[in-house]
Length: 310
Ligand SMILES: [Zn+2]
Image 1 (cartoon, rainbow, N blue to C red):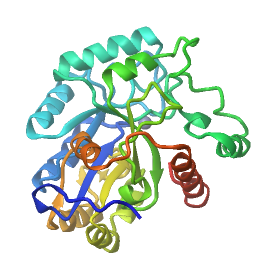
Image 2: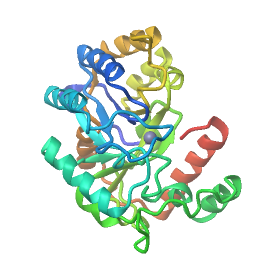
Image 3: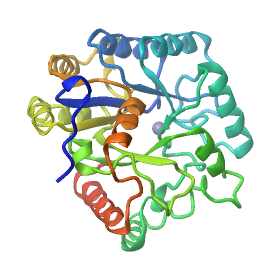
């Protein structure tokens, strides 16, 4: 069982979102974030810093678009957090990564405290089979036919995609495992945690599965919301707000209804870094031991194989 947390201002639970920016456009981003703001959710919206140099199926709007950048700055002013989803929608070498990180700091006047790897990018840090260790890595490699065993190089000092030292310098929290349960903290009671086998990441966090509108709505069902509250837990939703939440300029009715219901509960609705900064002080585990790592990896592998988590 996980440690019972006394949330700030006697709140009963915590809820936030990390939105991976894949396929995002200006209009739909405005629509989603205006609604979240109305309901008083302050969450984390990730960005791509620089326009890519070639088309890509995941591509979406980047900070090179001035109107979009203004929207992001407005959101930041309102209390939302701007997170990092790598430099752009395709792989970037170290030189471009460094340029991108410096540009982020210049635009937002702060480091990108929190990030998630964009799955197609080679500079991803400890990604693919490197998310796991021991027998779990062997199983993962066999199941994925070794496809992502040597693809991801962000932590490999001999690679042109290496940026581990920059990750350590600029970024506090990196997402790894995504679980199907709404109570992220119950699945990963150590977060944010350090892992000495992955020294270029300062702290890791986990998330709950909400990849697209269908998965998101399923995870925050009325029943699950009530349980999150009862358990006094914390939920960090993983999602792509560009995937089905808006259709023909309208937000999903189900999403609206469920988020409205959740907003009326006595929850702590702060950005991902604010939540993790708080948990870091509350939770005594800083560095996970091999037993804890192994338990976390088995749980994720099970979720991934049986429930298709990310
Ligand atoms: Zn992505």
